[in-house]
Image (cartoon, rainbow, N blue to C red; front, side, top):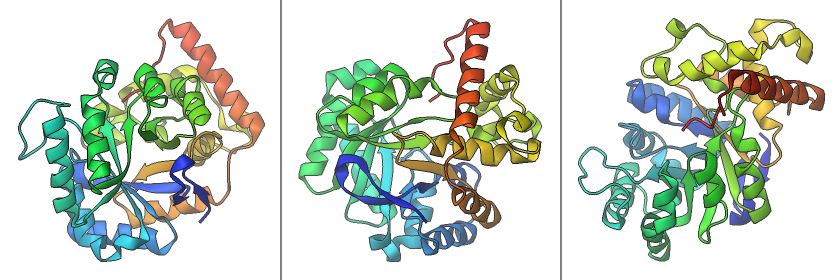
Length: 308
């Protein structure tokens, strides 16, 4: 497993993270979550990406790999009301109590990274939510603070003192953040985690999507169709190669340190690891995908913003 330095945090991280959304949203059993998590840790993946709002994912992670806490970088997200916590969204009080809740549920005394979970630009500008994270950092509850979101807010967050980590959407159907947020992060030395890395399988029929992901992926399905890409024009054989193309396209973006990929399946985890070993997509294929995105966006008359 290839590793890299995680921006100015100095942390040594694997190029891929386990994204814990699916194990929470799709009702994964403790046994199955444990199999996937332990396999990935055994194979050199050392970043786990979860959130307070991912239903039971924090508890699943704590129970499955809490005994291996020193083996991974733990990332969570907060800011809005979640089960068992009331209060004003993005208030210092709610952020602080959510950090404490995450520590309890994950069974740890610290989080390596805590991100504000997709708040709007005006929330960032007020500074209250980030200030609460920075106080949690001073208290030793988290090591680094950051922001998860997209578009103008993501670009602004990358310039804020105290933000060391940025998480944003980046994939073949979602390229807006390649134009502003990622350059801003690179200029500031901010570590970047890409979410929605493989466009949620936008090449699949909508009825093949699971649970909440059916509505979640619809805009990507529409964009993918509008882009009119042919795998053979990218040096591949056919539609069965789209997962590889998508993953390696995101891997090819130089400002991205870690790709967060969610799965509930050991078999899918193995496939993703094998694809990562092939390295970034060649530059001509990356350029062709960028051209297709920009041309389709222009034809649509829609700015095609990053999807949170």
